[in-house]
Length: 309
Image (cartoon, rainbow, N blue to C red):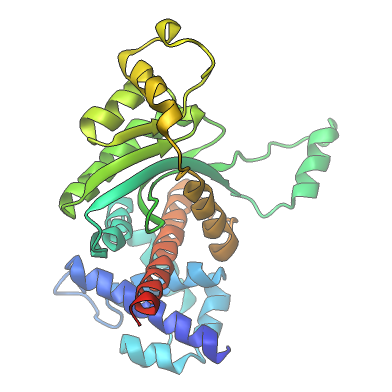
């Protein structure tokens, strides 16, 4: 492993540990725990595994030569790959969501520009060509698994994931709007942050969504409208009419940051999900998001230091 990459991974480990400490996560679940590996160590290793985009076996083999990371975590030997598998199975989705949102709370920003968008992840190891051939050949047609649809609420300024919703696609974008925004509002309230604006594409255009952005979040409504050429007097909904009156004043496009986060999440941490069971797939996606937030926070801190000096 190169020296540059090693430094980056060490910063990654320190960021995840700082987040766990800030959130006051218990190191051990019970006083009767074996105490060989703490919860902090297991969460850091699982997030680092997704960052490297390796299987459990390959990751443990690589970690065996990373003595600096082992010393930083305070462990003498690398855990067996089954230890990480069982730890991932024990972790709850709500707990992982809390860790993921903790990176947003660590930032010093008070007014946050929010954006919502969805992307797809691959739940099978079959190649795209193999799936395409199966769909064409009716005799050997098999049931191909649906993709995993991930909807994320994003801090567009820092490009951090605030909240998320996972389901099996294809599905309508509008279904996940309220659950994701409700989770995101809880995170912002906990971090004493306020929504400055709210960006979304046309898939989220509905009167109720516009109302939620304005009334519940108190943000500037920047959700794109369908049929924008229709006159205002023929547009349905009070909030949609207000949004259409402001449409010419929206100069800067912040929504493109949503696509950037989707792209980086899949390119760096991998778009393929290795787990087979649905519950484990959901946890694997959340660990990818934790890995993304930790790495993104490192980049943000480096940019601030660069501007300062």
